[in-house]
Image (cartoon, rainbow, N blue to C red):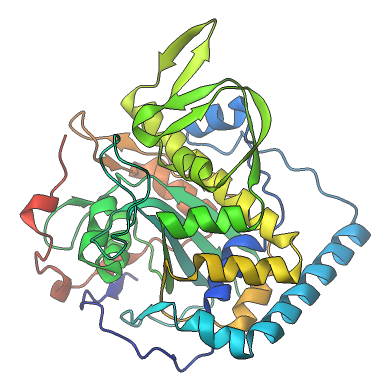
Length: 384
């Protein structure tokens, strides 16, 4: 049976929500996962182009080692939550923006939407990458759906930002729905993908970069040098390398990356760039999770403070959820899509819906009649 999502606007929530949540919740959810089986090699990205999960490789340590690892991580998570429950937590919580989401139907699964927003990032490539205007309307650069099942199993799908949302007044790309607030983005995910969201966490570009820097950077493996002047991305060497916050942010934002092949820079086409962007986004977020999962408690506290002023949380996050997520094995896949009209807008089609269902997401969500209000501003309509 199809579900209905309300499209009521986000309403301000009290600074101290009824459920004990903190910005460290976002950090733990986004970071306290094991290293991803999604390959960050050229073969992993190439497999993403085919819309499949063949690019993933997954080698698991012996059960005894896994048990010790998760026992350690859950123990550290509990310690951090205890530390942050004191005065430090009040300071971090005061920096978080809290919003309310329309309630959804009861379901044993919990669906999280993690969003990387372009707030605080200059849009002119000639400017520095970060601006002070973090409160300006933001677009969604990175979209990651995470499902946590009742028995603790989890799955994740990285969604291209140019997927078209329907049923919210007029067709609009998911990236642009955030301009009217997280609730419209949640409704757009319902209308465009059929997935109903319980929790949404938005982090801006500056907060993401500072988070990566706070944990000492992340490691990725690239098959060839990469550059994208528009995103301020330049990786001059191939192979395993450590990225700082600004470079990690540039990698997930890159849309027109060029690869050095036999001494010549080869540009990626629009469709390939969109898929690569989604693949790198899932990979980089996974590397952040791995880095924080291995970090000392004081490093986690520093990371929480570094990112806290750039985070918005909707729907609430509870510490119990964090421990369940910490013990989940998430392997992000990329949602396969196709272009419509030869421009930026994309739709998942039957193949995309199959990937979502394979990952355990219920795709029966439909925006109710009250949602067809046409609140999306005409200037936000998708362009070619």
